[in-house]
Image 1 (cartoon, helix red, strand yellow):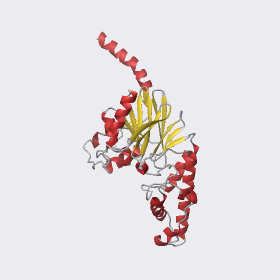
Image 2 (tube, rainbow, N blue to C red):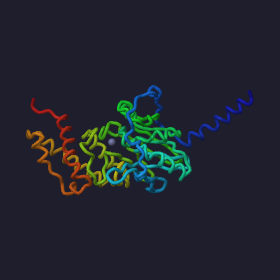
Image 3 (cartoon, rainbow, N blue to C red):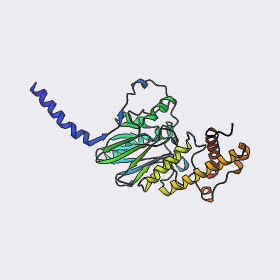
Image 4 (cartoon, rainbow, N blue to C red):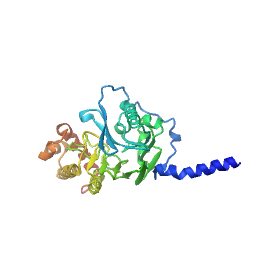
Length: 316
Ligand SMILES: [Zn+2]
């Protein structure tokens, strides 16, 4: 009995110390009901030995992982601390084992957290590897339904939040913020305040056209999100693709989105059909220089046209 009491006291004494090491104010969710959920084949899982991959220092303990090349690059930030690592969006199952090994062997720390920026398969695939090694998967609560509903073959979040979440790891602070529906309704911005670095995946751009027909798109929330980004004290923004960006790039993107929206709205209100309308949208000389302009311009008009058509009512 005495031995048991001693053990109990020792365990209790160790508790606050453990809490101080890695802590977060998220909420745990029970994913056991989804244990046997149906999953579609993971399109990122086919072996890809020739796909470029990298993990490079941004500043201090903050790194950026990339997988793919050119326009196919997917990226996410990685925080390395003495208590363990935090990884944002592993992105591809075929390179996630490499990323896991690179972190654990190069820095000799476990991966404690994987954060999902949003529930799109091209960013969150590959997290199974990290979950199997004990990483906690974090996402906005709204990410759970589409991962299950779209049958995405990746680890489900077990720790979620609604508006804001703070993770403390190895003395470093990571802030997660849920922004308005913009690119999906499960978006998390991930802020590293000590580094003035932000993860703003798929909503922010680096002198690059927004992807295709703006899939899973909410215009008003996109602008709200860019306005939120403008207020943050950040110097380096990882956009989940291509190359890192600045706040000035996001201001240019906001100008483009507002202009595209206004042009399409004006043309629709003038009674133009799609066949007339798409011929009459103009792009600024700056936007015409952006990466992917020729491939994406028509699809961007189409995505905005769909939004406008669904969010107006004339005199009828
Ligand atoms: Zn996306």
